Length: 122
Image (cartoon, rainbow, N blue to C red):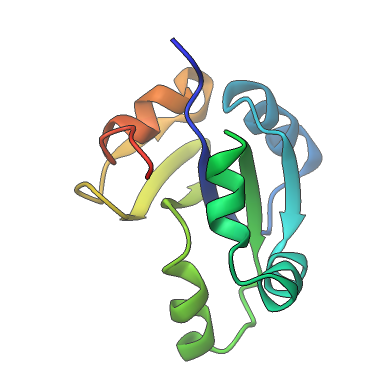
């Protein structure tokens, strides 16, 4: 079974240990800031399709100070939006499935998250 592609947004107030755990557990190819994600979208509006076509997984660290209207427009490009606090990961938004699921970071894996978005990206 191949690892599915994903654009995952998460809060940016994480320590390096948590980011390293996520990189391993979610098979991430890249971790970028929301500002960098926006720059890439600006340069090439097809960037999300490119991520999926090359079967890549990126984690976008969301800037909590970004304007809410703008943030909501950018979030539409994410497959899943997560929030981490106190060792728990909450699914806030999910493109193809129900949000509001919660997982322990110690037991998290990519299939668990994407299961709720049908694990399929077109």
